[in-house]
Length: 138
Image 1 (cartoon, rainbow, N blue to C red):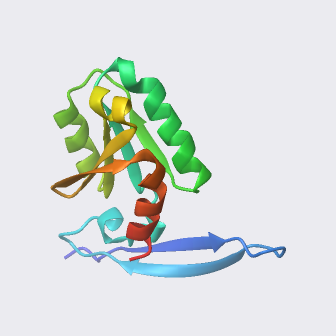
Image 2: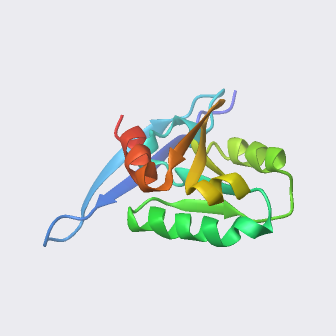
């Protein structure tokens, strides 16, 4: 029987005015769960992904990326010509907890559809960062 592997992650947090503080976390491997899935959302390497419906909303999606990066959230975008279902499937395989769906309707109303698991909720663009940070701190 092969030995189980462990992952060691270094978490670096900036201290105000001082050098960055670092902590080490050891995450033990479980055969049925990938290491990314085991990570809590506050240290997930890619907590947010954006899937665009078509090319007409790319500029709106880019403004969402800028908004999220200002809040120190890592974002992955997919502007490819693949179907939205295929993009969602790809993001689920990567174990990304928050998927933002952007289409014509969301662009016109300045909202975004947030998919967490199988539930989809519509959130105003101005409250998006607040909602994602609330999920992150749970």
